[in-house]
Amino acid sequence: MSDEAAARLRVPPPSSPFHVALLEPEIPQNTGSIARLCAATCSPLHLVGRLGFRIDEKSVRRAGLDYWHLVELKSHVDLAHLSQEVPRARWHLFSARGGRSYLDADFAPGDLLLFGKESVGLPDELAAAHEGRVWGIPTSGGVRSLNLSNAVGIVLYEALRATGALGGARLTRRG
Image 1 (tube, rainbow, N blue to C red):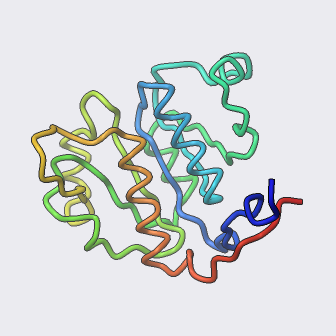
Image 2: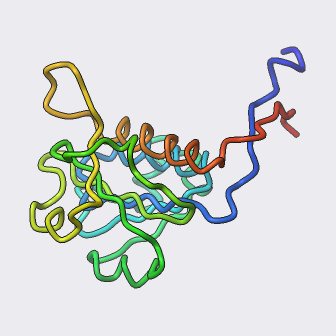
């Protein structure tokens, strides 16, 4: 493999990372993909409420998540405990029913990006309690919603781009 082929495009870790939070995720493959995104962006991953799968070491190993040890993973019994963990974070909620585009969000380093479960999204009462902070990803096709891991990737990288965290990218050699 040539030196150029071994190089990777890298940016420095953010000094105040975004927090990605999943409310009662149901599909382990989605959470695994999101965990990989979080590891790649140095973003803590918060799993909130009852999970639709196990995350013990044996289950993680069986799923082939060999990068799981790179994820700053935090589990919370409910949203109140999540709020205590990140008391100064501004919350952005993402829903297929969001009335404003995520491209208009006022992202700032350290914000919390909250996504609902795959089958039903975020509870209506939660969205109502955070009126003005609920965002959607515009689509033009006839699908009901995007895959959760795709939605997190779209939003997280836009938040990083919008706050300048992707600036200064450089090719680096693997050591």
